[in-house]
Image (cartoon, rainbow, N blue to C red; front, top):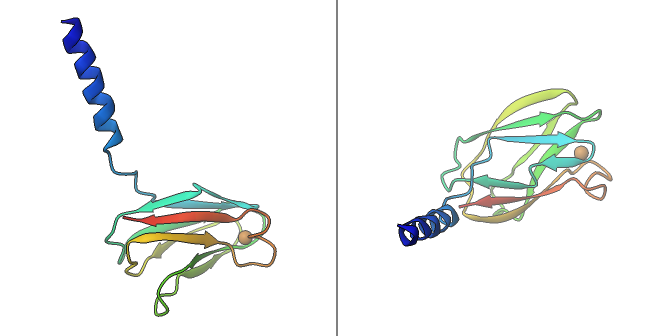
Length: 116
Ligand SMILES: [Cu+2]
């Protein structure tokens, strides 16, 4: 019985390691950081609604770097606002996200976008 319990525990841990990352539905922008700093999206991003919420005291934006030339992801959000942002089709991969307002990226407004 004890062996069975140990085996079940090992299976539970192994199963947890195989889970897909939790999809990010909301990105919070603050002065001067994003939460979370890793944004996980499923591969089929076209039309996916990512809520951008600015809890800061100044405007912030959401810019994705490294996408193919014909895809632009850039949206500014005023302070104390929350907007749904429908994403275009993004190729699977990892991209840098940053706030393009002057000095904000340098102050720490960076994140990583993972499209599976
Ligand atoms: Cu900003």
